[in-house]
Image (cartoon, rainbow, N blue to C red):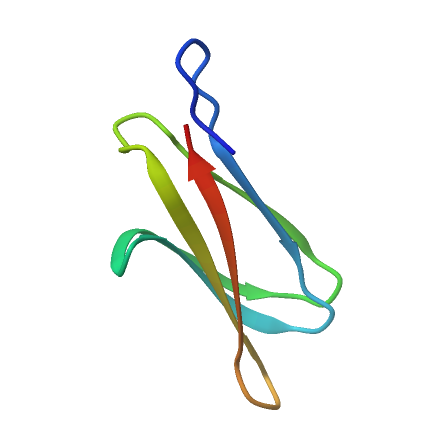
Length: 85
C-alpha cells in the first residue's frame, strides 16, 4: 500500500539481479502505463531502489512490471501489485 490521506507515502520498488542484465520497470494502472523506468544494465548482485510518487495518482490498484534481459538467455518478467489508498 502507498498513498494515504495525511502523509502521502511513495511506492518503494526494490529489486536485485543475480547476473548482469538490462532492466526495465513499468508502473501500470489497468492496462495503461503510468510511468516507465529505464534502469539500464546492472551488474550481477546489484540492488536497485526506485520510488513512484503517489501525488497526483488516483486511488486503485497499480502493478509494477519488471522485465529483466540477461546477456545470455531469455527475458523474464515479474508483476507485483500495490494499492493506492
